[in-house]
Image (cartoon, one colour):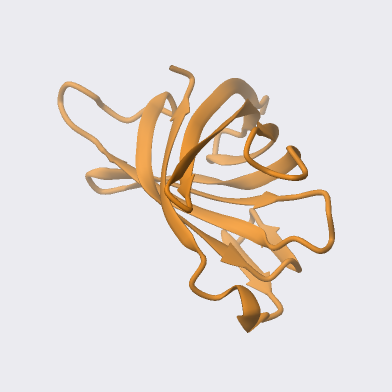
Length: 137
């Protein structure tokens, strides 16, 4: 089955600043995706993302890892969601709101099992804030 290419843009908050990001992702029919983004607030702006869009009862969840190219920077986990309503039924095109948080930089995502595995680095614990991501809008 073919992947659907969609634009992605949004922002995340960090230290009371709103940082923009944009790019594109290739979404498989099962919701797994990979892509590349440009993070205007990062010291390494060109980054890869991978994750999953999951339909869960009355919510659509967007979960992904954003990986800076520098090995010295932590990966970031984004966990966002959007309600499913009669006016906005399920689709990949939507606006998601949620949180991001810093994770250890050695992350692996397995789209078959929908899990992330990581080595723990407690020095980045507690770093995170709000985020809003739009796909295909």
